[in-house]
Length: 284
Image 1: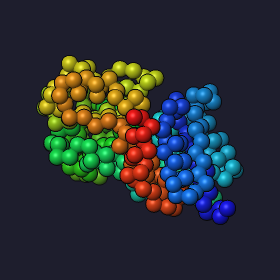
Image 2: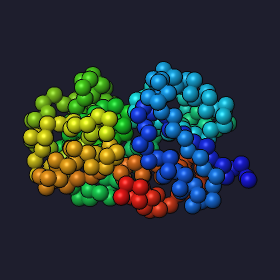
Image 3: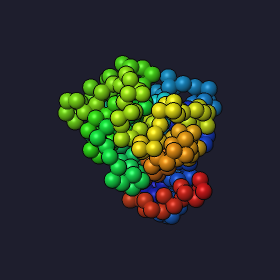
Image 4: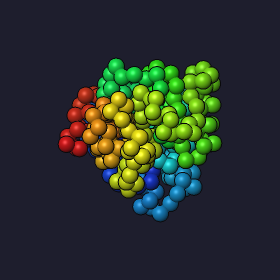
């Protein structure tokens, strides 16, 4: 078989056994006539932490991996270990895709594009004058860039580490103009005047049940978006839908970030609609 038609990829992250990403990539690889293998490298299962990243990257290179996806908690800690960053990854300050090519490790960010595409499809025509975002980590940075690119006028970012929220707001204001983002301090006040709420924290995942905001702060006029997709209906979305809010689950971001990552790994343009259908078939 032509070695250009062989892709060996993997996902590094913690608690990723439920990930749909391997099946998403492998099924599209089959449809494209590629020999496409996608492996999970689960830090929890291996009893490792992000300190193992240098060893894992070196091992992947030695085993001729084509590339790696990177998820929580490694999207920022991996950056010093890379040779190059795409403009998106540099601007966002987070990497979710690493292409291993000709001895170089090149970091990309497909989360930003993935969220923006899902947002346009799933919540067309919603108001974005004021948006509240929970979380300022690697995924949060990508989502914040996407929201401001999609026209959010004021993004209030809340994080358990106020300094992390402030650092992200400072980065965003440099890119998008002063005053577009703030580190939030009064969550009830911000949500009372917001058009929408986005959760970019892991809260709501099967292993981290609960909601990132007190449910009594939700109201019918808010739209609510989620990046967690396992389960597809998080507690936050369930509560929001019960109130009549417009909602967006994490499935579209999961699919559209994978669409771009597939292209980066394989050099082949995937069929986005087919990948969306694959995903919906897995969670249906």
